[in-house]
Image (cartoon, rainbow, N blue to C red):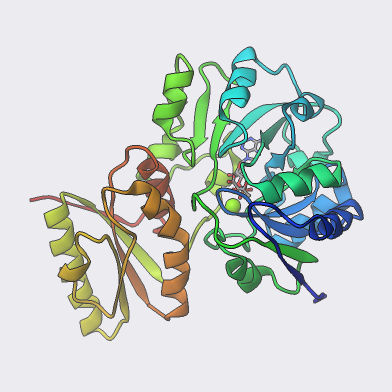
Amino acid sequence: MSKKTLVFKVNPDSPEDDLISQAASIIRRGGLVAFPTETVYGLGADALNPTAVSALFEAKMRPRDNPPIVHVGSIEDVYKLAENVPDKAFRLMEFLWPGPLTIILKRSRLVPDVTAAGLDTIAVRMPRHSVALALIRKSGSPIAAPSANLAGRPSPTTAQHVLEDLEGRIDAILDAGPTHIGVESTVLDMTVDPPQILRPGGVPYEVLKSFLWEVTLHPVATSDMELHLNHTRSPGIKHKHYAPKAEMFLVEGSLKAVVRKINELAEDYRRIGRKVGVLATDETSSSYKADVVKSLGSRSNLAEIAKNLFRLLRDFDSEGVDVILAESIPTDGLGLAVMNRLRKASGYKILRVNE
Ligand code: TXA
Ligand code: MG
């Protein structure tokens, strides 16, 4: 069952040809290779090889009804994988690719059923990372790549995170250091009009709004409640996601009230012997009394917060924290993606407080 996972240390800006060739040959013969993108690390398999994609689901222990994103090396490739591509979609690809935007389109017959998880649509994106693009182009095939974590764990932003979850389960990893953005791509459904954001991510809502006439947010993208959906257009929505091992609560409201509430909860939990972690920001971290306090970064730098999020959730786990108390952050720009991940990570255990 366990195999040797090869680790290739690769230059993030100008990846070494021989390393990319070795990784691409693993993909071509149906193997699994983890690689960096600008968002998080992905676990890649040849998207057109059903056996390889099947192995991908297996390695991640991912439910079979949740399709991976198919990564392409050119816009032309989209026209092989998809049908009825709207003009709007083409313009978005031209403006925003390579970049953290995934587009849902009607799929073509070229796409194996297992890759589409039985849906009649496909998710495509061109990542903005030299290593990812070199690997896709060298492989000569589109690459199916979900985030390279075990299902239900926080997405990996370093090669170390990938190895924690998948060492012995995958053939190789291209290690190019930490990823730049830290939250996954925005998933935009373009099979509906107006287009709808199914998952907020690296391309903010405001940016899509400025490019498209109209764009809507699916209720789960913003919602602070768990929605019970059977037939959702984004299968990922209904699966448990981004969960740290500790129990997590998210506290929303005015900053002052949030700090006060978190301190109260921390005291209560510590009194009953729990090890408490607080997920804070630079502005507030010195105000907490807890076992472990970690700062996401400055509230005025949402890019920094996004970049640190998944790493800190994993760090709490490795420090054996029992309870995580997390602050909410503003929902503009990348903040919407961060809050969406925090809400999910908390299992929607959200406390609302006010002055
Ligand atoms: O930034 C990213 O998007 C990373 C990197 C590796 O590219 N990938 C990633 O993949 O986050 P994954 O598989 O962890 O998340 C893909 C999301 C899931 O929520 C899935 O349900 C949704 O995209 N998805 C995939 N195919 C879909 C489809 N045909 N219709 C609706 N949603 C789809
Ligand atoms: Mg994922």
